[in-house]
Image (tube, rainbow, N blue to C red):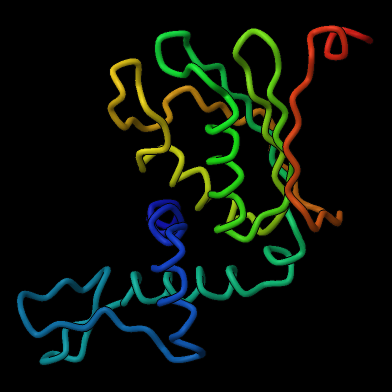
Length: 180
């Protein structure tokens, strides 16, 4: 249940609502049929309120310095020929979503229809960016219809100090990307 709540509150608007609760105690209270495990039954004044406790724990994790200090993630995107004809606008869309999530980073358009994306910021913001990439219409298919990203693969996620204050975008010619 904790991982489900973490995924749910990776949405920026829901995360903001949870954080606005401040230090208040959160209770999943109801007066209907008693759920004495996840909630709190008000008429009988019984219940474990596990949902409320999980939400308060998640709220404190979202506020913790570790989640604010920075995580880094590396993603790979291999787009099929039939979906994307010009990587430039799509890379710009990736950048726009990263900025709106409060992330810094870099994307590199590689030969043979690949994009590499490095992100830096709060882990919850990276989760929110990934969620938007997979659930919103971020691209157009070969017929010109909006579509979601299905080829995004997370290669690495790590926490730790590191400073990035911009998001840059590059295009690498084959000669540079093969020089090892």
